[in-house]
Every structure is written in C-alpha cells, then in structure tokens.
Image (cartoon, rainbow, N blue to C red; front, top):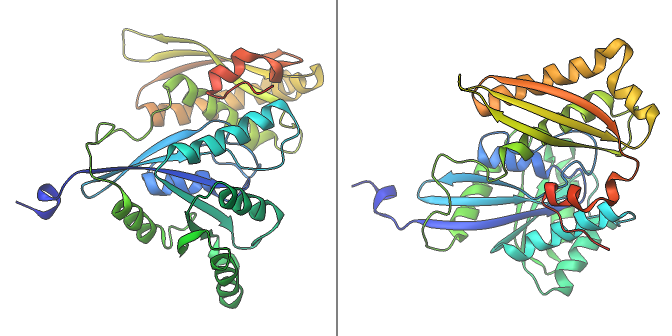
Length: 303
C-alpha cells in the first residue's frame, strides 16, 4: 500500500485575503491547477467568495478567494469587504497575500491591523517576487515578521508558479484530519450560472477597462439544458447609463458580438460542452442597490 493511501485523509479551508490586485485570483488558480477565479488587471474584480478546490497527496484544500480588502465607499464595496473578512473567519488558515512592489503600504497595514485586532494568526505570501530586487524582498520579509502576526513567510510568484508548490505543501500539512468535503475531481463550488456570469464579466473588463467603470454586472437569467448535451445561456449585462450601453454594444453590435464569442469559447472550455450564448444589455440605473443582485453574487446586502 502506498504512503498516500495509508496516510489519513485531511481537509483544510484556507482563506486568501489581501488588498485589491495583490494577485489572489491568480494564486487560487495556480493552487487549484485550473481557472476557477476571474483574473483581470482591473482591481476589485473578485466580488464573490469563489471557492477553489485543490488536492495535495491525501489532502483536500478548499481555497476561499475573497474580494480585496480596501476602504469601502459604496454599498457594493461594503458588501465585498464584509465578505472578505467573513471568508477569513470561516477558514482554519488565513493566508495574506501582498504585492512585493507595494510592500507594507497603507492597504496592507490596514489588513495587518485588522488581523491583530481580531487576534488572528496568518501565513504571509509575498507575491510578484520576480519584480523586486532580493535586498528589498528580505527587508520586506523582516518588516512583516516584526508585526508579530505571521507564523510563516513565503516568497512566491503566482504568475510563474515560483514557490507555489512549497506554499501548497505547507498548507496541506496544516490541514486537520477529516473526510474530503468535495469529490476529488471537483475544482470549485460556485454554481455554473454564477461562473458563466463571471466569465462574461471578465471579458467586459478585459476589452473595455479604459472606457467602462465598475458600473456593470452580469446576470445569468436563463440556463436551458438541451437534449444534445449543449446548454443555452441567456445573460443580461447591467449598466447604469445609456452611454455605457452604447460602449458595450459597439458600432453595429460589433463589441457585443466579440464579447459573446470570447465568453462562449471560455465557457465551452470550462464546462466541456457546447454553449449557445445570448447577451443582452440593459440600463439598470441603481442595480448596485438591488438586494437580488447581491443574492445572485453570494454577497450580504449591507446597509
């Protein structure tokens, strides 16, 4: 009998927290070994707690990719920050990811102070180490160690995978003994409807990040299973103004067609089936104040 089959099963929950754009979604995807979280160069793209599931020998690791923690201004902001801290509370292990270039800036210090105030210990991963000189990395690691919050400090690049295997092995060693929470071949627990909406939202950010602010969300209105094994998906892209609607649709519908093609190809790869995708754009002036939108995104409506 091999060591992996004779060793006890373990299952651990790991919340990955950090400031917006620290690379949390990229790290979750690297730890899982598949794309489960939306990744763009726009900050605050993770609005919901996407759970990725990764295996390491006889250990199942459930990663909670939380929204970036920042100073909230709007109701949606408050709901996102609330979800991030709740994700940390729900997990046995908290992993703080910081950007090596930004270091212990105001946002990172705010999170460290929050952990301190809650009496929580964490593991630190310094990300994007390929962008900073070694002396600066060592000085940053020393500065973070002096906060007294971190049990271990790892140097990684979520993008290249440098250091990720060592980090994953350490997280697996911390996981408590117990049965797996999910089937071994499952990589995420977000619903397919929500994942489909996230995929389309990612394409909007990738193509229109300069023209379009955050005032957009995507809702999967219809999901119809077809007899031939394919799926018919109808989605609504909510914007706040007519001018934004025009940007999303584009000249003679060209942009909407391109977004649909990009999203459909990604969905077909993710769902491993044919997808018939239909996109509609709707002006919903106050969608960010609609309780049902928050429920669809898995967020608490925060007054």
